[in-house]
Length: 119
Image (cartoon, rainbow, N blue to C red; front, side, top):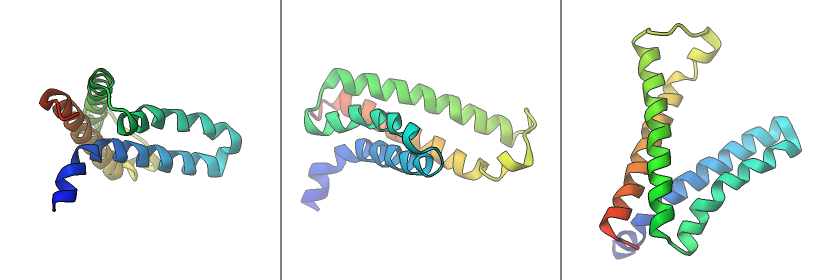
């Protein structure tokens, strides 16, 4: 349990690195070489694990909290039938909502790490 309590602050960064790796592998299967710029999205999160920076942590947390809020609003507009959407896109809505909510939680966790001065 002591090991978990020591490294739990790195959970959001590992989550975003895992999402970047998953996104890369999915795009790489269909697009090939053009998927490699996606790996650049994981560099700031990897940098936060190697050499933490309070400023970068705050920037990443606020940026992803804003982006996730936008995704949550899009998810809510679909679930409330404000904007109609095609049937092919509607099968991904449950996963998209779960993804948006998880991203928001991880972004708030990064902001919390910045405020708590856990680095």
